[in-house]
Image 1 (spheres, rainbow, N blue to C red):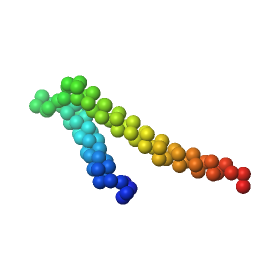
Image 2 (cartoon, helix red, strand yellow; image 1 turned 90 degrees about the vertical axis):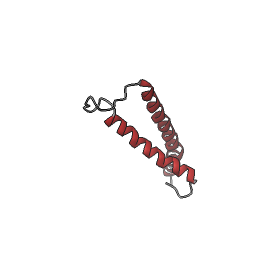
Image 3 (cartoon, rainbow, N blue to C red; image 1 turned 135 degrees about the vertical axis):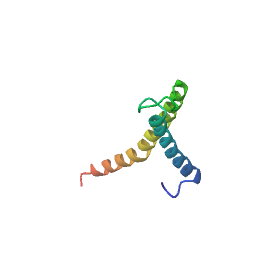
Image 4 (cartoon, one colour; image 1 turned 180 degrees about the vertical axis):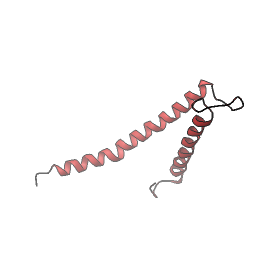
Length: 86
């Protein structure tokens, strides 16, 4: 993370890491993807599925835009410089 970014951006970034870890824990421990016993808590209401998928999609769309804005433009400039005839 760039030291020039505001504290709030850093907080959001670290919170996103915690969200990803929670999603993995939910998938592993609270769904049928891994064996369950009768006493285990199981999430089976689709409203939570929509919540998680939409959250992940929003972050994915941001990351895609960030990549295109920050890295593809820089690569395009470098490619243009490399095309110089001298």
